[in-house]
Figure (tube, rainbow, N blue to C red):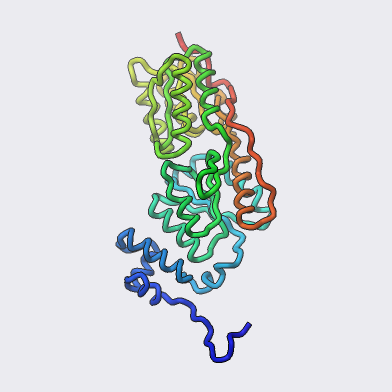
Amino acid sequence: MSAPTGQPPAKRPTIKAVAAAAGVSTAAVSQAFNDKGRLAEATRQRILATALELGWSPNAPAAALRSARTRTLALVVRRPTDVLGADPHFSELITGIEGELSPRGYGLLLHLVAGVREETALYQRFAAEGRVDGALLTDARADDPRPALVARLRLPAVVLGPPDAAGPVPSVGLGRQGAGVEEVVAHLAGLGHQRIAYVAGPAELHHTRLRRDAFETALKAAGLRPWAVLHTDFTEVSATATTEALLAAPDRPTAIVYANDSMAVCGAGAAQRAGLRVPEDLSVVGYDNLPLGRWLHPRLTTVDQQVQRVGGAAARALLARCGEDVAAPVLEDRPRLVVRESTGPAPG
């Protein structure tokens, strides 16, 4: 519809208007969107918020498409590049996601970020430029600022993690995250193990806290105490070094539980290089039930958390939030122990 006679059409906001409203230079606006320069974080956030409010982005076509569907969803992962490439967990997760997106003509935009600041800026650019219809948030954390951020940006999102109805963004995952770890402790205690160590992930992750609590509670119920609980960054180097330190102790553990299968494989290798047999001298347990656990010798005892199925359910939940006619996913199961040959009776 044309504008009424005598009334000029609305003007598209300019970078100068954003700079004036934010009280900065146009160069600072460019730096904020390119994540370059030495802007103070408070200044960067003010610029991005001002641009979003005015409806400006550095890409004019993108600004015109802000209200249009891109049929693209974002998966942002805060992990080092080498960890993502070496951990099959994300291959399984993406397989589950793509299984729901591809038949509906949607694509997945994968981004790796190094820290909170980079991740925050990325979501703000997504919203300002209209590059994606929604986002999948990985690795729910304690005091996680991202759900509130994407809600404020009006960017549809779901969190991959234990179900939590209290937050501004729904979580999609298996319930009772500690159940699998409880089964692990019962299994090892039943084999006579008393010196059981846990090699966990980063302490700030929500699932790390849930599983650690379950590990310590289950050991206490069995009349035992953790031999050690050590946190890692999920890297091969960290998993190997942590295992070597545990095995070098005079009264070493007889069983080690790892936060994922990739670290468990590294741990089993470190034990074998140290001259120990798995499971005769050391029992090893992973978490994820990835295919590599079935390829290992001896095959890996692990916890199945249905990574592909959870990825598909998260994709369906996000598609529904983006306005697609998709049935709500149902995840009524919980993580369950899968016993294979990497665990056996305690030595001696």
